[in-house]
Length: 235
Image (cartoon, rainbow, N blue to C red; front, side, top):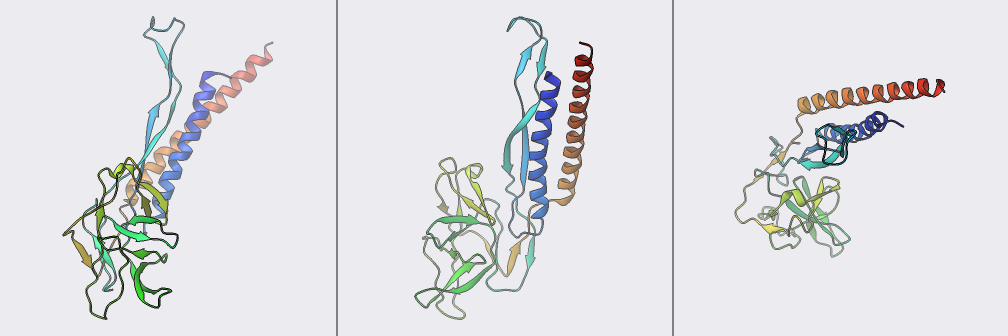
């Protein structure tokens, strides 16, 4: 196998992963509170050409890899719904907290909530997946009256890049993100939902670039294979 073959094959693999990130963004263009992801690449190993290590300035690279996937925490536009149990956050660093039936707490920017009857016969605020919405003291919010105010908790983290997406528009904290911190006085708009932060034009542009890169790598693989076949036939 030639270096060119391995480099091009590696490029195809990682461009496919980048396309997966872009495709996931496009599929969530209408998901309330969704935060877009961005694929970032890093160079692979460089080696010296026909010289001992450190004695040549001429180097050959071995392609690139998907170094990381960053979540772009940006506020999406707000859509007025008129529902009293719809809430939107105006600060891109803030989240709602929800507790699943297994007791785990996750965080989300999707503020579409509803009253859900629980085993004790009372109604509690919950999201569309059935997880209970928490107040600033990490307690479920019980219905106390038809027109009673609903004090939804708002939280943030020291390092948002440490959060991990868990699916269903949720985030889980890690040691890198630090623990959730309540945000007193955070602005929450009732009767609104936050739109997805995905910019469709940007994602389609990224998809074209990634597809072209994949096609070029595939062509390099084909050319390398043809060269190897020619060399083998000369023996």
